[in-house]
Length: 188
Image (cartoon, rainbow, N blue to C red; front, side):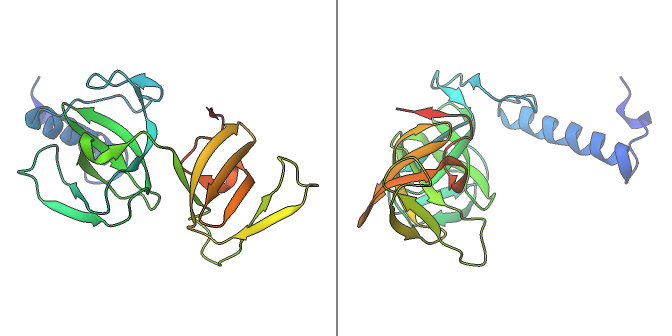
C-alpha cells in the first residue's frame, strides 16, 4: 500500500484517520501492544487480569512515564499512596494507567496494589459534599459529609451502593459518586 498517496488531510475525518494510523505505527515500533477502542473487559496478556480495571498506588512516590521502560521520560510523580488509578493497557512488567483527572502514562506493576480505593466526586469543582449513609438507603441516618477528593477504602459495591471507610468515617455512598469503581461493578 502506498501511504504517500492516501488522502489524509489536516482536518476532519482525514486527520482522525491519520492520527490513529500514526498512533498505531508508533506503538508497533515501540513494541507496545495495540488494543481496539472497544477493548473493555479484555484480559491483559501480562497479568491475565481484566483490562481496564482499577487498582491503587502502593507507594507515596510513583513515577508516571511516557512509555513502558525506565528509559522513557518521567512526566509526573504521584505522591499519594492509595490513590486509585485505572489500568488501561499492559506491556510486560509495565501498566498504562489513567488517574481521575485523565493523565495517562506507564508505571511498573510492582508499584501498584490490588487494594481497592476510590476518590469521592473528584469532578466536582464547587466543593459540594457527598452524604455518607449508615445503610445503603437515602432514608437512613447521615454518618458524614465527604468533600470532593476524599480518599476512601472500598469495602464492597453492589452496582448501586458502595461501603467505604477511611480516617474517621465508615458507611455507604452511592456508587456513582466515586471514581475508582465502575458503575455496574460488584466489589466483594
